Amino acid sequence: MGETASRPRGGGPATADVEPEGGSRAARLSHLPVTFFATIMGFAGLALAWLRAAPVLGAPLVVGQALFWVALTACGLVLLAYLAKVIRHPVAVRIELHHPVRLAFVPTSTIALLLLATAGQDFAPGLAAVLWWFGAVGQLVLTLYVLSAWISRPVFGMQHVTPAWFIPVVGMVAVPLAGVTFGPVELSWFFFSAGLVFWAALLPMVLTRLFVHEQPVPDQLLPTLAVLIAPPAVAFLSYLRLAGGGLDTASRVLYYTAAFFALLFVTQVGRLRRLPFFLSWWAYAFPLAGLSVATTAMAREVGGGFLSAAAWVLLAVISSLVTLLTVRTVAAIARGQICVPE
Image (cartoon, rainbow, N blue to C red; front, top):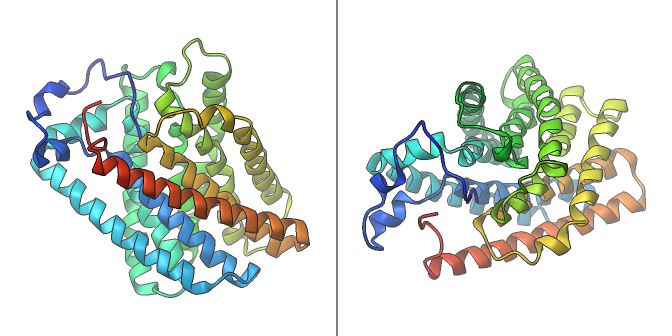
């Protein structure tokens, strides 16, 4: 994810300075994208979807728990790999931190920790608490870094705006999902409020880019259209946690906004399915997982067969999708198509 035809026009060293010759492991490591953490978001989101479906829909609890440990293991491997990149290829890391597109994906690393903390809070509370504190502090630091970069660096223009710009916002509104359990409730309100306001501020910019901007979103980034679903879906879940459950006007607006964006996304599926496989396909996973969890919560609060059936359909869709993405990603790695120069 994060592939793009545009490169920074300043603020970072040239890519040629960090590309070792040949196809060695060192060369591959230097091109490990920070966007790989989006795969962890997908696995953690799927685990959370199954865990939340257990008490409401009667789904097997063991499936969600097993997926949590798979996601945690995958997160550890990706963290170790990226840490090796930080140590051995610091210039490549600095380039990502200055890249006009990949910069928005940097907080996926801390969002992955927050989602794992949310998934594990009921059956691994000690581990989940550690993950949440690292994730929450890291999310604040990275969100401030990304927003500060957008403010202060002239390299960023409307041609760089994509739905991926919502990623830092998603991380902020995701903090209360486990923050109500592990931290002061006012701290969760702080994250939620900041995330919600910046989502409202970014939404007109993103829609303007999608609807009327003269430069279309590159094919590699078209899967990020799914990210439109994530902020209202996650905000809905966090609001329920902060408000202590029960639906009101605000929670309904958030859920049905997410549902509308999902329908809008469905209208683009025919176009998206013609794209070749990119790592950015993982952008489909977490937003749909978030909608799955949100729909399960609506089924719990409202009742009725329609929402329960919709929750089961979404759970089946996200399960099939993550399986497909895993197979395609492993195949791409085996063919040497991942961790290569842009």
